[in-house]
Length: 253
Image (cartoon, helix red, strand yellow):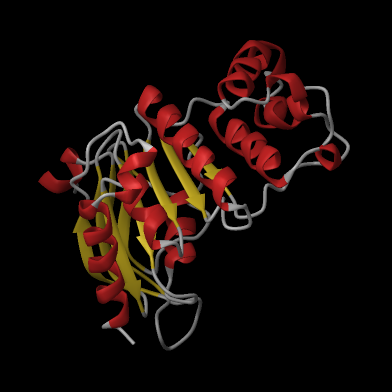
């Protein structure tokens, strides 16, 4: 039966354990709730369980114990209301930018109805003029924008992102952070974003979890003004929050 906490959260992860068949669990008794429209981040060192938790929340893996609910419903496999953005854009080389964005709808034979929405997303992400180009003709940042548009084309209520900006230069990364926050806020999307970058987590999130050895070991609420602006990154409150996260991660060594 769902608990009161489940009912209050759009995403409810409760006492989830997953081991990949190993003796030591990869995700160990994690509980985490995300309200509708909230942006949460997971940080931690490589191998701490962040991506596995993301895949569990996507329904790509099934927990050994515990349960996950999305919009009040128990998760038993991928949910069509969830979008996923991978670390690599994973665009299909033989499809144009527009057709890559439309791919999720094409698989449902609904691409004709989605063209207007796809063009709108590409315009919002600043790459509408590239709709007819192919992936090899795009920069890394442009490819990442296409991947975000593809994840949003189905109007998801939940967006899961696995270090999507890790390979980008600093300026492109910051612009994409702003673009993504605007889109998530506009559509009131709940987001769970995995990153190794402490400053990125503080800038984007309402709440950040530090993971280590499969567990959430530290939680930090980010009390900074929204909508975010670049100037926040240079203020004392921002630096103090980054410092808190750094100390929390260092203490887990």
